Length: 319
Image (tube, rainbow, N blue to C red; front, side):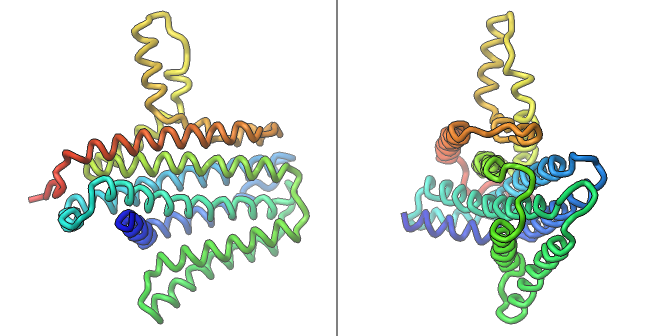
């Protein structure tokens, strides 16, 4: 268990130190913060568009970070032979795979949480279709750049990773501002409880993609892993339409049912449509979605561990 913990911590920090991680986070925060600007003068649809845009940005950027971090860290170690050094020690292969999955998953969840904090703040900035709270908007943008400044200072004074400490600063600053808005700002004209459930349901989707990305990275190189994860993502968006219907041919129906079960359905975690029509999200559905994500992730983790047992640890090298 100690080896598993160490691998998970190192994988988590390595993911945060990837420049693409903070670039994606910085871009997502600025985009979410500017949605109130983009949705002015839309005549009573501002909050719906802000919520929809913020949730879409959070989900897409989080899933992209899962794929980029997993393929960058795991596939690189497989390619340059770093895994051989780890496995030469008393570290089992399942500890390596599970440690990588835990580290990448926690890093991706941290990214998702920060974006969720920003989404709540963006809802408070959007007062109505004709105005927005400029003080909150300026403060939010200032905190986003302050997180960059914190990373720069830590990098200069201690030689620490700019990306890693900028992410930590963004988590503390953006999270603190969200708490301030919830406590002292007037509530927006929507259910904060349902908004919290909708944002929370993005986390199980991130967990599934992180586990899938690490599993693919243990078998394939960077480009094939990214392509496979991208295909699974887009197929999962329309899996209900492609494979969820009824078919007259029994063989075709069996194949579609198997594909429907094998491909993760991201629509289970997308509640922006329910928020748009002010439909309440039952707590039982939240637990059902979490259970689905947990079962799917466990199956994917078992597949990754079993398939990695006979994998050549050194990978392939380019000539």
